[in-house]
Image 1 (cartoon, rainbow, N blue to C red):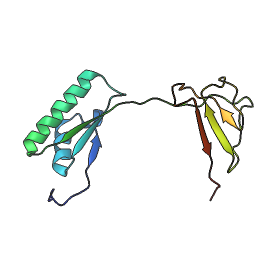
Image 2: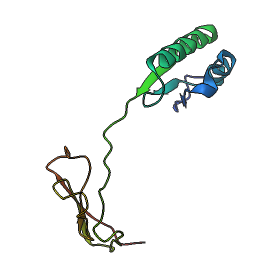
Image 3: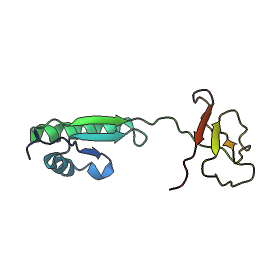
Image 4: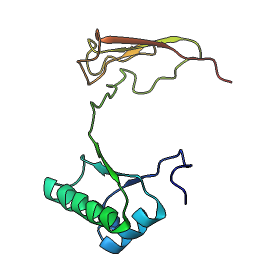
Length: 130
């Protein structure tokens, strides 16, 4: 494979299935350009060990392989609806509102667990169904 002509990069997520040095060496030889570590899982020692395995596999293959650390961002979850379930209407306004009580959601708005969002309100008009 001529790496000079390839524009697409191959990103592979590391985990227990790639802990075998032979598996990692095969991945590097097959053309992986970047390995991803999901920092939401595992411990620092696991990540450090996997980085060392990647560096060794890349050295043996005569290649450079980048390491991408994937950090978890804020989880924005909606709260509950007063009526239990609601059905959103096509084209109707619906607001995610950080100031609403946890169980005060309606067909027009619902509270959100992540209170640090912008000004506390996010409005979205749903597009008509195609």
